[in-house]
Image (cartoon, rainbow, N blue to C red; front, side, top):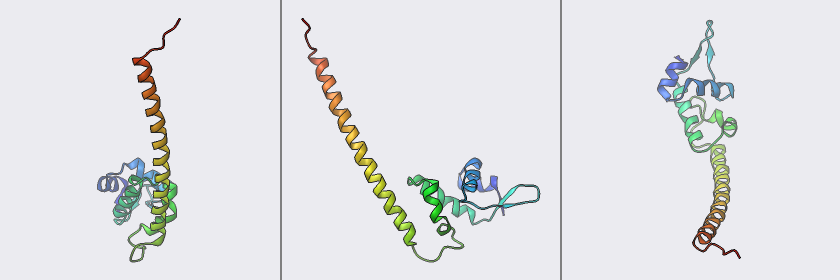
Length: 126
């Protein structure tokens, strides 16, 4: 069993993040009589998987429905269709956000060009 500090050291996650994962139902600990958290050694790989999903743009709310599939001890062999579907939804969301940002960028570039043109040829006042 690992202390929360040991788990943090092995995964690179902060103690605060680990507590946050636990409070959000993603990570399970066993409480000792003194109140300290203890984690199964498999939690190292589990936290690594959570952190990978977070780096890939998933939120904790998006991870929660598939959390049981992240645990190497309980997950079945092969790739889970739910995880594939979750990645598909995330890619669709990212594509929509990229398109929206491209539109915003195009409008900003047009406005910048107009401002630069006005700076070169200021209007004359009578």
